[in-house]
Image 1 (cartoon, rainbow, N blue to C red):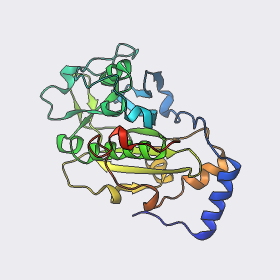
Image 2 (cartoon, helix red, strand yellow):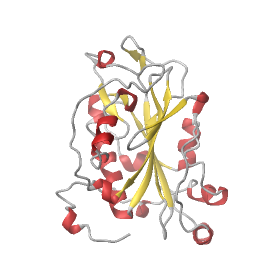
Image 3 (spheres, rainbow, N blue to C red):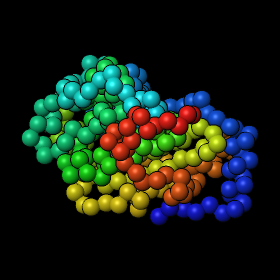
Length: 267
């Protein structure tokens, strides 16, 4: 359930926002277990060799990128040659019953041909139940695009919850099948610096995105990851502790609903 802020909390957050009016870079998330960080055209990720997928994928998504036209979806899934220990492969997913679920979605990478190519590498994939990947997870991705358009830009951190020693696996590379996925969003532009997180089950169970919402603090507790390492401590403490419904309208972006000709607000 969305958490309401008290009046005193609102005053404190407003004061902190005046002291820290904008964030140029909230920093990359913390890296679990010393995993290696890799940079790509549209995002960065920390790669978990034990689970053969990313701990997290982190990127900024701007309004201009949401409306990008430089690239179209390729569906050309590839091994990632940059992963020193080797990534998962097409054979790992073949006949597994799981989708090759994007962490950084292809629809967020239309602004660059290289970014589109990169996002189809298996380092950006995680095994997802088909109805989950094509249903509620895709719906949430579309909402993130709406928030990027509506706010001018957002920072996104997303990935599987790798909180167990042993998971079911697929393929000869033993790609872990996560039970849950998270998505954390930060709107860092004034006048409304705010953040929210979502935890969703990797299952075919019907899920309500509003019910899946939680504070960033709760997502950090579940994952063990510090998502925004460069935010000043006092501001981080406040914006990660709570969230409100009105800050994050659950509207899915589509070009049909929001064509470029109607996106006239300046940021």
